[in-house]
Image (tube, rainbow, N blue to C red; front, side):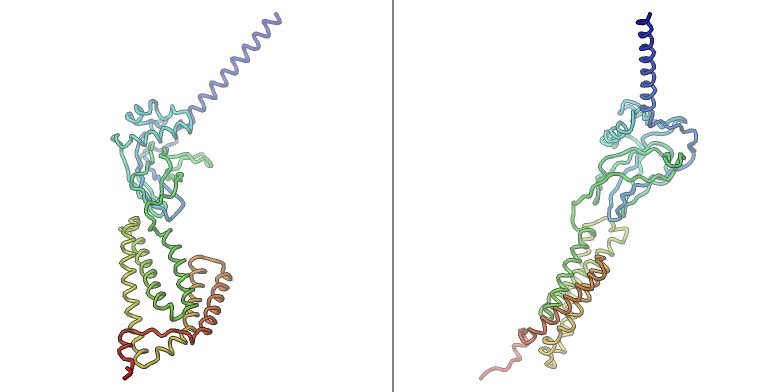
Length: 348
């Protein structure tokens, strides 16, 4: 009897264990089921793709792959046939993820309702969508970001904190930076700042000897950058980086031409009254000050370096440049234009 009793106890325990495992499996397999009696099927939903980086641009398709049957979210027939089972039969997050990735490869061949959304400045929204299931797939028109994998969105989505459904859904997919064309604001801006600082240091220490390089070079960079910013702030060229490059170059060469013209106009009266030599040997007071001021402005206002570090760097360049130019002011070489050489007295 004792043996039979122990056998019966083990049998009961085994049955209990099987029951618990069965219930657990059913619960896990129904993670994506939605007890949706609280869902308002007549409401519209908004789905936002947010990259949390306002320098990113891309395009996504928001594809309706399923609907709501009154109890659960379900796949459209064409999608269900491809996946092999309905959405609420998928066993958990990992199978949902894999289904989305697999579906993204063939969804373009299916006749499904698609809304194309441009994600500009890191954010894009598909509005006035029907309640249902949506697949988020990046199109081939990737600008400077790439979503790692397609994903499925239940709309509306359950708010885990409040337990209520939200009809304005914000998704933050995993993504990587794409560098297919380096002429973009986030690349050009730091390069422009570094080159500008180098030109300003030359201006501090070389004075007039650097003006013929710094002034046109600075005009080239400044005007080009202004042109690119204007283009990037318009809807027409906001995500077209090649066009931003073209506009940069047009503005840059225009600025260089204007700079040379201004230089010529300013130097003519100095040459005509014979003050060019005096100007060359004393201009360092102005160039050192302007160079230091420009360095401080870029470090503090553009690169957001610590205020006192910016002040220190500007003072070192300004004072050091002024002293250096003062010590070599009498060694300045006088350069002549062809017209100047024609005016020199000839020896008989």
